[in-house]
Image (tube, rainbow, N blue to C red; front, top):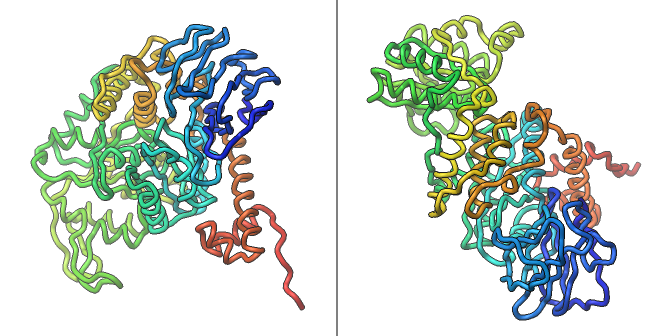
Length: 561
């Protein structure tokens, strides 16, 4: 699809004239409109705005820029829709600014006011998800951090103001009408938080939420879920509990839950295995709630979310003065969970030194705070989880075999969602109900065609991905969720490989690298070749810019002799 081939035929543009946003094919393109007159849109080269998409007719629709603005279907094959209703051919229909008009598989929106800042690319949600998955893989390999922003704003020209607030190197996606997502690349938590504050200052009425890799998630679906939950929670720092459904004793889950209920009553350590997003934390909640420790705390820690020194302090606690910044003694997670349970997610990511200390805690039932000389007794049940093959990690020397046998008193293996197809539609309906309630709307039905697509898809991100898809579809739909509100391009593929190998990532990497190179070239040009100034404009460090110059093969200036 080509959204950029727009041509003007004897129509004069004026400053402040309306603009047309065209949404489709993974991108959002904007085109100037005349201050008045007719604009014909379609596939024909003679149209005022040509959109090369097979779902459009050669002459599909006519816009009349007047007061009010009207839209008229020109007898198109696939129709023109406003507010979910198909327009009668040849009958002009009055529309409001910012109202979405659907022509074929493409959305168009008339924006009445001139942009506040120069236009920049707004990517579609499908591209943004692929780009996010690629960045997770890249950051995992490089050991770097980045952020994901979700922004909800009703102000006119909010997208352009958002584009001016973030750095040139960042990636902006359109999540839904009046909602955007931003990939904050190569950013520390402090840098990403500063950028989030800048967006709030630029858009005072906006809701802004930030999730960080890897602290808040190590895949696209968990980061998206975290950002969405924080957006629903409201002000910065407020946390909303995840809208996680209960586990249903359906199909292969029936025998698993029966086993979980049997082992819940004891104190034996549990190891929960399963792919990312299958509900390992939900199963841990289920076990704790049915145990004799249900009245005690269930404290949780993502072992992949923090560096080794911080992880050690978080788990075992520290004494005053144990290290720089330890101004007061602090009990660790294991000590605070006394009388209850502790859930160690992604235990396969524990560094070797922490593995050794944890083994001693499990064997001796006592902890030694960092900097302490005397151990403290604890009474804790251990529940661990991982998506990794721990036996392979043991063979490779990355995980201790003795620790494995200690944590795997009983192993519970959660099947992937694609193996639990009987749960897909009930889960989707529950997610739609919760999303609609948050929007103060009636719960949308899910059409038979949409249900078939949900059942055919392989769900590599499992329940977490399903929740993300349904929450977005609920935002986009009117009375019912249909195929048009689902990521049809991705879900229509016959199979869905693992996120790091997802189809299209090669193309995404090429497009992302090209955009990054363009941003760097523009910054260097504005800075007259001064790399320190260019790095400042891009919002990254000089060292990061140097690495990117090498990565993209920029010619480096030679030192004078």
